[in-house]
Image 1 (cartoon, each protein chain N blue to C red):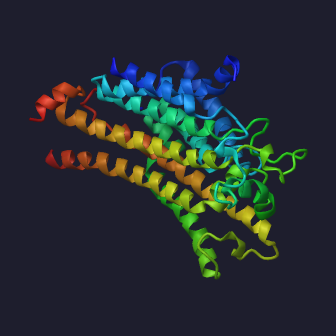
Image 2 (spheres, helix red, strand yellow; image 1 turned 90 degrees about the vertical axis):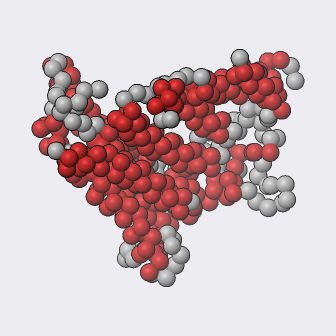
Image 3 (cartoon, rainbow over the protein chains, first blue to last red; image 1 turned 120 degrees about the vertical axis):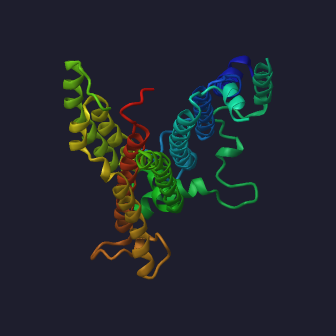
Length: 124
Length: 98
Length: 148
């Protein structure tokens, strides 16, 4: 329980929390609509990293069967289930960004601006 | 600002999360708390005999959970149709006005 | 883009690199059983090789490479391949998407699941490639008298 073991066991959670804070800052504080969209993409990347970092085991290798590591002992390979689920999540994120850009193009054609405060004035 | 307070609260909450790669954590056990076998250990042990495939992630995505991959593909197709329907209607309306 | 790039370095490099990226994308799809990869990753690589030509060249040339009218019909063909494999397994008397009952002669059950996963990955790769290229084409339709 010394300090080095504590830092080596928890440092990935701290990086993920920094990415979460950057994404949340972009989504709430910035006024341009495209910058809000970029903040959402950074937030999604942090959530996917959190799931994948929960799947590793100590002294285990990637989930592709090798000849000298027998399959009867599941402690030799890391957990393959979160990797499969996060592939689906990445593709759903790409589809969301595509539809969001189509909506942004329609907003620009109708209101001639992409700023949040000017849009709220124009829509009254 | 409030986002800094949010980040500090999350770092304080990360004290209770398990160590990275701990073999005693609940995520990495081979038998669940109620005594039933866990899905991940079944996928690791039986991927080669069921599907003759060395890659376990492709077997999970394509054979054991193929229904989720089907729903995934319908999501991509629906996103393509939405972009086509939203952005082609303006062309026809402007062409009909002139 | 409507007007092609005017720099000879970009024109030469995009023409040379695009077939190799397409070949690598097909390798990633068909080796999804033995190395990391599969349908979605290979489909994204194939789409990037087509979009590279669309960025660098003018409109007459890149419509010869991959016509934009082929976008959504080929995407529907990709989804139908996935559904077709599941339907054939249902007709032969099993569950939906049960690959052990596909009607290939003389192959045992474990090999049949191997070929079932391979057909699924080809269908997914085709659908992902054509839908990503058609999203790019629809986002860039613009009038001639409008400049953003």
